[in-house]
Amino acid sequence: GWLGRIAGCNLGKPIEWGEHWTTAHIRDYLERADAYPLRDYLPLLDPMPPEFELRENWPETTRGNVRGSARDDDIDYPILTIHLLETHGRALRPAHVAEAWLTLLPYLQVYTAERAAYTNLLHKVPIEQVASVRNPYREWIGALIRGDAFGWTNPGRPVEALTLAYQDATLSHVANGVYGELWSAALLAGAFSSATVREAFDRSLDYVPPRSRLAEALRAVRDMRDEGLAWEQAIAAIQERWGHYSWVHTINNAAVIAAGLLWGEDDFSATVGLTVQGGWDTDSNGATAGSVAGVVLGAAALPEHFVAPLENRTRSAIFGYDNAVISDLARRTLKLVEG
Image (cartoon, rainbow, N blue to C red; front, side):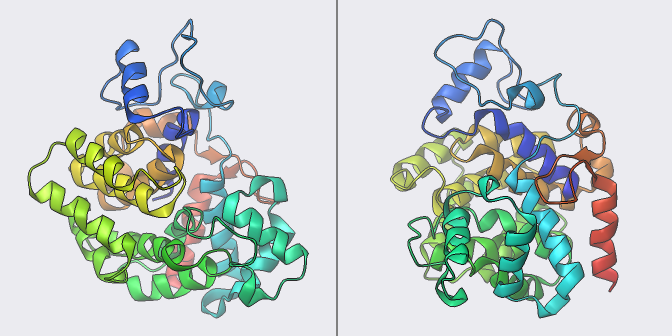
């Protein structure tokens, strides 16, 4: 799970800009680089055509330049979750999450809903109101990306995973923002007892409020797969139906993740590649899809070209965790499972 999440995150980082890197723009770039469909870290065009603009992290996230994982909030949050669970266990509450953010997580390394919540905490807004006061991002993807570690530490126990994830999500999010984290926690918990990624996905739908917009989107993507649509057709349908949301909203990005999982067919490279090709919040989506595929397939089955460049270490903005050893994080995760 750790390896899959970190590799998928790094894959999407150089094109994490949904307004610029549309699906069509990504395909154009990849075809010029002779790298379509995407099955490895993003290649670097040299010279870079002026119509393409990679994110500033490209010197450490493009093919041939990955030497250890780059820092990203999609990696910071699972690290912080392990710390929280080691400290508080099943007694975890939103106030504990708030204290950890203020103590260990720099303000400038949190974004959208998390930054709004952080600001509210600094202004002494009551904990039960932090998610909703001056927070127009409260249904965006920030909570969904924080769910994995709750699933990793509750393998085969989705109810326990989402119960803990709820304590984390409600600090900064409401409604579908919260449901996104509950879904990701249940999805990862169920992945440990699933033979295929499709099985893990199908099981996860039982843990999304059935009348929510998130459940509607996830079921719709599943139906597209069962109806035999090609991935390109499904992505076009997703963009038409949910493209009115911000490119960092929970619902549209969850649909892209679902498409990557369902069309990836238990192939790690295809799963993360298709997910990132779907656009919008590419690093977050690649991270979640990679995490699920990593758990189902197992570390030994993950492609060497994704795993070896990580050099078993990751940068992090969490105080005391920079240059963390990935295998050490995995051992600490396992220790929480064993109690």
